[in-house]
Each structure stands twice: as structure tokens, then as C-alpha cells.
Image (cartoon, rainbow, N blue to C red):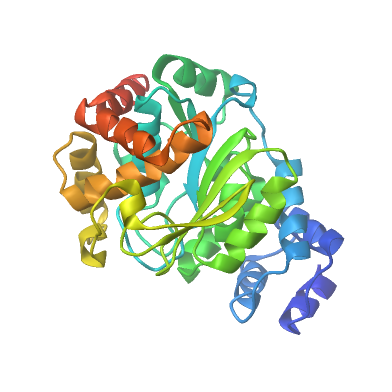
Length: 331
């Protein structure tokens, strides 16, 4: 471990096998908090290499608890976070909108690191009980159309490094790994990334796995469709650039996507969107992201028809009913 740490601190890249060994060391407690902080900060000054990302990812998946849910016939909506935009919980809300439209969702998430309202923060505050029990998760999928997987319960390395990540409060390579390590191995994936370089790496990796995927990056830096700028989409068929009008939706202003000053405010926004009581900008952002996922899963639906399906899920309150059913199932 010491040799690997020294290599990182000398700004040298790890080979794929070395990255895998380092992640195994983190998971098994071979690194103390100071050493883990050194690993995280070593990547602040440079980008993670493809070999490193593949090695870290392989180790996380080897070590993970991997529930078999719907034989993989599920979609995950998960972003890297770390874009510094402090938006409300768009991807988590989109997951309920997609589930409300009849598509099975296994949402992978975690506590916020650079913000106070990560998906796990909001779900926990609203009464969801985290579990890695396959039976519970499958029952939630069958009964409500959605389940939530709190990443540290499935990934020993994420649990080991969680405290250090929160203390540092900065994005790290774990942000990049998050959407790539859903333990249920969904056949469909809609993932937001905070820069184009990461988007291209995701596309390269996911194309090798015969998945139907959409990787999303707003050209002004959001790891989701913000409608504040054009959106770059990566899919198995290549790259495309979507304008706001392609969704049939109005352009948003950045301040309209603000996630709130604290967790209570974030939860309030979350519930208002689900109850169809939010601002047009908030609903449009959620509908646009949900539409990308709906189009990914259904394949033969147009983007505008996918937006209409997402809006119907919100306005009919099917998304809210899905959320209520999931929370009520915890009692």
C-alpha cells in the first residue's frame, strides 16, 4: 500500500491492477484516514486515467453485495454530483417520475459530499429505511416500481472512505465511480457527468457491456439536463447535442434550479415537485431528465413523447403516489 501511495503522491498514474489492489486495501481497512485523504487529494491535481478508473471499478464490483433484481430489467438514474451547482435533487425526483410512468427503477445513491442534500440525505429524511436485503428491494420493485440502494451498504470501500469524503467536502474520483457501480447491474442506465471527458470515458466503458445507456452533460457544467444550456448526450449510437427546444420546454435560469440552503428546504422542494406544486422551471428540469431515461428504456419513443409521459406522471400525481407507496412500505 505504501508504494502505491507514494506513486500517487508523485503524480504518477496507477496501472489497472494497482488501482484494483488499492481499492481492495481501502475496503479491508489497510489504510488509515490520513492515508485515505492522501489518496483522494492526489486526484485533485490531475484527472483519473482510464486504467485507474477501470481498476477501481472492478474492485468495487468484486467486493460488492450484488442483489439480483428483476433479472436486470431495471433502469438507474444517477449522476456523479460534484458539479458545484447546488441544484435540487433532480435525478432522484426523475427516478420517481420514471417509476410513475411504469418503468422499474433501482436508484443508486449516497449522502451528499459537496452539498448537504444528496439523494440518500433526502430519502432518509423522508422515512426510507436503507437496506441491502435482496428480498426487501425486490418486493419494493414489485409493489411500488422503485427501490433505493444506499451505496455504502453494498460497497465496503465506500463505507470505509465515507467519513473522510465528508470531512474533505470535495468531489473525488468516487463521484465518477458512483453511477458505474450500481450493484444490481441494471440493463438500462441514465447517468449525468460533470464534464465531457468523464462522459466519453463512461460511453467507452458502457458500450463494452451491451447496456442501453444515456450519459448526460449540460454544456454549462451540470451533471444533468438543466435546460440552462444545450445538453450533450452519449449513447450506444454515438454523441448528439440536444437544444432546449428539442424537449419542447422553456429555457431555465441557473437560479431557478437552486437546491436550498439546508436539508429541510431541499426536502420541501422535493415534495412540491412530486405534488405538482413546484415552479415550471423545476418541473421542466425533472421532466427533461426523466424523459431521457424513458426514451432510453423504451427505445422506440420520441424525445417529445417521452417528455409528455414524464409530465403526465407528475401532473397525474402518479410519481407522488409511487413515492408514497414506497415510504408507506417501510412501516
